[in-house]
Length: 583
Ligand code: BDP
Image (cartoon, rainbow, N blue to C red; front, top):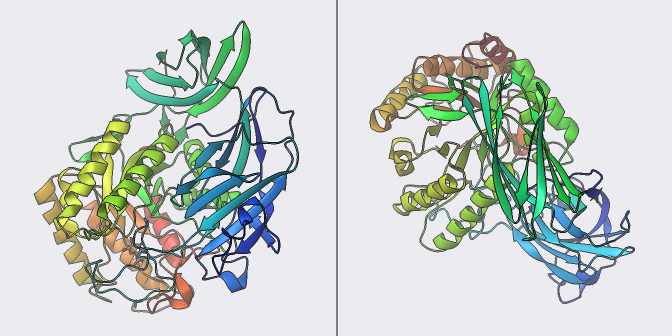
């Protein structure tokens, strides 16, 4: 899937701005014909969650209808016109000028419709029904009985089976774009290294069988390279790049891959894709980037900011990369759902390594509805890999976070997803993020292990000595059983900024700083540990429950408005010492 771009042959019209919204509290929108347009709407910003824009709707996760009117800023011709949504949480139904274009399930991945037949030059009316309901047959699930989750849980409002606020709405840009009919529809780039030479293999796709010429140019470092060939619906070509400038943290070298299609001596389409030449492998107990061991230092994170909720906010993306750079991180996980495409683009440009996670958080394995949940996870895995396969920053796929996988069905469930990911992308390692530990059956086949641990917090509260011993023992046990490298993908402590205690006590800045430092000491003593991801980079909004003061998870080493707690300074000291960042 290619992100829309503007050039002489392609145009993008961004529909971001103030739309109308009408909340469908009585479920009347369908029968009242709101799909063709509605009255009594109120202004709402797109992209953004609705919850923090309108106080009265903060906890509302039901249906809402959005609409906008627009004129097309170009002449309509014989091209293809597409309408693309970066993400809508959770279920979207879309109508253009009264025609139902289709629907999409899942809150964090893009989808698009061909609107060529329905688009007018002027006065188009676009209507989107967004249904954010939390339900057990959705992924991530909500309103799940505690029995199905196989654990004693705490009450949580709104009731998601995950620990972040269930923000709803149109979260990422809505783009109308025009491209040549028969133009390029997809590119898949895989890179390899042979000595000093970079090997770039490119697969091109278009949706027309009439052959045209394709010209590929690779520009950026050294002399530009070019090659040409004929393409009908698909073609594959390899480029050899002498003295390749490899991509890595610290030297995020990118090339522009420019693809042009030519028909009857005229250029009819052009697409420019930034690419990085790099390899990523698990070998023995190591993670190898460009053949050299690399150690991951960084965070589990969230897309979360006041007022905008989970909506795209470019300035916060820039700020967050600046803070990760400041603190000496080289990586993060897109916990617990795919992040915006803008976030991924900057990871490529700024040189961060990403464990890219599907939205499968809080999965449970009760028989009832299992096949449907698996189908959804398959869909997400396909959509995520289609979207992010060309990012050099993406070093691994994470199939799920903390599944409740003590039931036997979990193993076959993840085997299915693991095989699917491997068949779609044989070049990247695949993992699963576990809270179960040694009994996580999927650890038998995933390429490396990710474990979340809170000794000294949820268990052994206030006792870091005991907690660190337990951590150490468990890591050894996991290695003995699976012989695979491991990332500690979450560890941390809720911390009230400004709360101090000596000796350190839970919730104080001292306790968080000490816990992180002591965990890191344990991790660095295990040669099979390939990374440490602190939970969380920033405080973030959650539902309301006893353990979430003010409706926040306070495990950030930065506050929600991005100010450092004491632990941020301590991490900076540890991480900036530079060991093993592979830059
Ligand atoms: C882990 C979850 C994460 C939570 C974290 C916590 O993966 O989503 O926010 O615990 O409790 O279990 O802070």
